[in-house]
Length: 98
Picture (cartoon, rainbow, N blue to C red):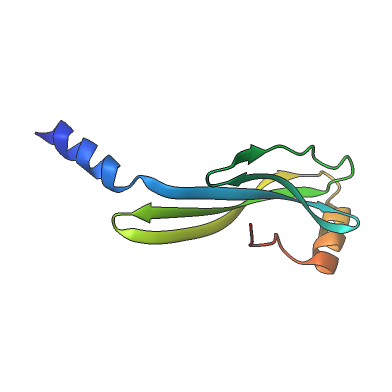
C-alpha cells in the first residue's frame, strides 16, 4: 500500500514545465549563459573567461497542485572577492528572469 501512495505522490508532483537560465557576472555586468526552454531543450553557451560569479535562475511549474516555483542559486564564485563585491555593487544580484 505504501509504495502505491509513494508513486501517486510522485506523479502529482511532476513538473509540467521546468526552465532555467544561467547568468554570469563579468566586469561588464551580467551576461546570459546556457538555457533550457520547455519544448525546445537546452542551449549550451560557454562561460565567459572573465566571469566573477555564476548563478542559475529556475522556474518549475507543477500541475497538481498547480504551482509556479521561482528561485536562483549561486553555482560558482571567483576567489577574487574584492572584484566580486565591486561587480555586485555595480550590477546588482543575479537576474531573476529566463
